[in-house]
Length: 313
Length: 299
Image (cartoon, rainbow over all chains, first blue to last red; front, top):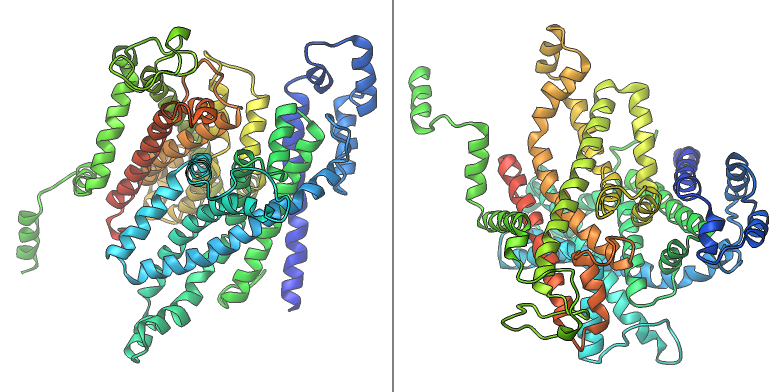
């Protein structure tokens, strides 16, 4: 157990320079290259006095490296200051938006994972037969379709044409939970498709191994062989790529939240970029980066737990 | 005896070049061949867009606004009376240019960094791993948007930075693959032989090792173009991509979104064009993967 703790601590330490890198890249891309944020915010109607006042207020009158250092010091404790557009605390804004993204993302990823594993398993068991070809065709289409097109398509079909589901907006009122249905369906389809393909490949890989042949030779029913013996090993690549799944879910959330006007972190980020609201951009970028890093560590820990051949070092 | 067997083998299997072998295997894959034909067709349409178009794709004609598909306007017209067929045709140009530039950028960066990291190992390797870890940790969409924001508008009609941003954000996969491949190539005899003959690192990397991963690169080109077309459409949809009068498929989809009920053709035509292009490039990539590596055929 101590080796797990040890590993986690060291991985967490290694993430510090990575997160610093993400911070610095974001700072350079938004703060240095395209010129003065205060001027950009003022837009067409700028007057020198107000501009100067804004600069002082946000510390933009200081040299870039001082700004960088001040920002970094605060960002280290996850304080990103106030939004340029509405002066609200960025961390608080993200925390307020977080439940909306979580209520959409976590169930979608979980359901997508279960369905994906089941479909991938089924597909691999019937390799190159009708079932397999159908599943492969459907998942290929889902993986290829740009995510926002899928969202628009389903919004139009299920929401506007069939009037089965509400087309946009957040949970509101007793029937409000229905608003969750369409965006969640789209997100689930997204993670389902990717994980089905991954599972299929992994199971096929495992099925050629000797211990599976032995299990079959013992006379175990096919389902037992696949579920009890093959799946355990086939799960490993899935768990290892947990961070990839989380990242894909987050990217999906940007599009789904935009299409369905869902007030989550993704919409916050897209709006922030539209308004060049630098503190909020930094906050959401770092939020995504921390999420990715944590998922990566959890994935690696689970992999080590499941695969005794891997030793944590 | 052994000699006879060998002669028989030669008699049965004529000498073929590597590329011919790949081509013959690819030709057996119907889906991949259909995709290839479609891709060539797209290329032709993109090159000959001014000849294929039936109207000007940018000039507005408000009297002809939102007309349903007809003989004069095959795919109908949009809000400003622009012919959607001509806009989709010109959009092919943008889509392919996005695909080619973004993929070229991603592959050149990925192969160069990955190659150097895999070949030298040690500190250089650690440095490259650090850089790609940072890029991989960055939420990908925000990275593209941040780059689009920061890059100066280059080229005409100022779209180049979008293509560059997509390329700069999608090289990590190729870099990781090249690095891993090179770590195994490094131990092989031909590298040792080249080194013994006095070849320098650059010559070994680009003259001997990179040609050994041609298959991976060709597959990555096809897959990368599909990804870049989808990415450009997505970014344009969010409103950060190609600037309005230009007929990008993503812009057309996002313009048409509000008029789904009233004028379905405004969104359906560019959406289908995007889908078909992405499908074709992805299917071609799958086919090429099997053709280059017959042992690893999709079981």
